[in-house]
Image (cartoon, rainbow, N blue to C red):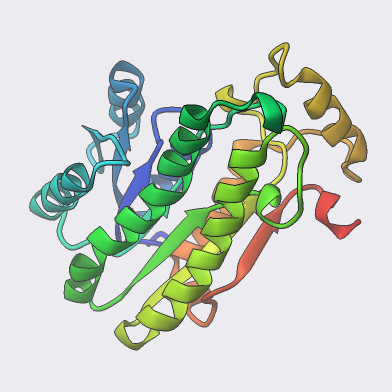
Amino acid sequence: MGRVSGKVAIVTGAAQGMGAAHARRLVQEGAKVVLTDVLDAIGEATASSLGENARYLHQDVTKEDEWKQVVRATEETFGPVSVLVNNAGIVAYGAIEQMEERDYRRVIDVNQVSVFLGMKSVIPSMKRAGGGSIINISSVAGLFGASHVLPYTASKFAVRGMSKSAAIELAPYNIRVNSVHPGMITTPMTTPTPESEASITRFIAATPAARWGEPDEVANIVLLLASDESRFSTGAEFVVDGGISCQ
């Protein structure tokens, strides 16, 4: 028996990077997992590599109707949802005075509004399941300020606060809500670009562990929160950052 045997999970942004690692770890420990993303070819390949207990669905996480479709399809395929990992996210680098409003709003929509829609959409299914665990992927940028990533920081602080409010509201239904706060993790999103390289270099230099984190190191925390081992943990932050937030 795995640590999450019998559980049914949805993981967003799961085609690659941290989302793929979360899905892989949950399947390895006995869960049935629906992976969603907009990168269909990569997502299909990732789900296929995980075997019969994984499925891929296309999803724009900023659209409420697509959330309803994903929850309905998950129930039809595997049963009521007991785990949601709100992992989908994007970043936009730039000085505040040069940031375009459309870029700011896009980050908020993907990183923050999608978390609201995801939580809202799975609640009825989790009630049918008898409870559940919602795991919202925030960031250390949801714990302290960071230069040249204002919309990302705003969205990740919001996810932290939303998780606490939801935890209070949903506790009577045996639904737990926690936020996870990774530091710099090796994923396609964090691959250095001319706009981001200097910021990333400073970030790694300031990290006491003096290295990048790996997606599996975050996935292990997601697994803990998805499992009943963490059944008394709700409304909390789980930090996976190599120590940068201690300073």
